[in-house]
Length: 508
Image (cartoon, rainbow, N blue to C red; front, side, top):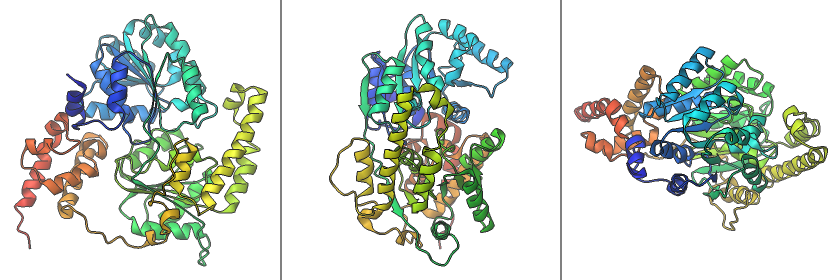
């Protein structure tokens, strides 16, 4: 099969997004890759398609158990043989998974970087016939980036143990030049092909404001309540600086009738996993979270990300804000600023920062440079949050080295419309809304029945396509982007039945 045929069969799309085919061609040609692609641009397709086209196994190195589990669940639903090997499995389950992998049962295997140091896994890998190693969230290799993970530093040692060096492809959503250089050097990439598809996310609206005192005890919460009244049926994330803030915000929202969960690193692992799964499957709509709710949030229909507090770095802000609108549909990212945020971060998150993993990976001079760099990053973040005079999108793009002089027309500095965004939205949809609701209910029912996230069955964009085009048969379903051969076989009949029933209802 050609890569276009694989895309249509397993993913249901007739064309690749910008940069995808280019990366896939270079991987299949045997060249290492360093790709910086924004969240929602389809990075996973860039290594999953080659995995299907290449002989042997593709190893995907991923930092989070939840991310691996979600990816494998979605791949299996698409008809792709995949597995994960991590600490959530018992030794017996790991042994069985490796036996099956050795027998050729899987094309894609997800592992945490620390797994690469296991003698048993090394023994498997040496004889497994690994064609490609994909390093997801590759910025974790750098102390200068977000989410440093020491295990990433030992990936190159693992690849050196293999009899034949596979192609190595590194992917990340946000990385400045210093982090990109670290990725290349620490992974020991050989003549890598570089690709940056651009950091702009045109579907995202960016806004900053200092909420006005309206007599409410917490002006930020006052704004959030008014905002949520307009977004009642939508999924959203509210990022906070501290664990206490997440619990306070979630508790307050629940007291006002919203179904909200709190998420932070101090929680029990099982509880965190349950809350993340509840959010992924749509059982709760709102999450109040610290930055611990980060990588691996594989939910494309997040319609807004609010920041209750300013984060310390633009890079971190853009990663967190970028969890909105991964499906390409319009979404909003609004940061609520107060000067107290700046002084709190400076005092407790930078000057008193104590990160053992980063500390041990740095020389004394690097530690000094790192603190100075963090203070500089904080100043840039404060300017972004408080200036109100310069296009926010342009500031973000300039930060990542992407020059543009044109105002974006889709941020609070360009439009000055952030409080109109709390008013009810009365825009008329361009599709049959009643049919959309029925199709959405069917998708939710299928999700509960199969254990597959609803967006992996049919996301809102696909359901809108159904409710607009109203296909009569499987050929009609094939015309709607996202309906792969596997999805049509598994779910097509049930969606077509809803459409036929709806068409037979007399319209008043």
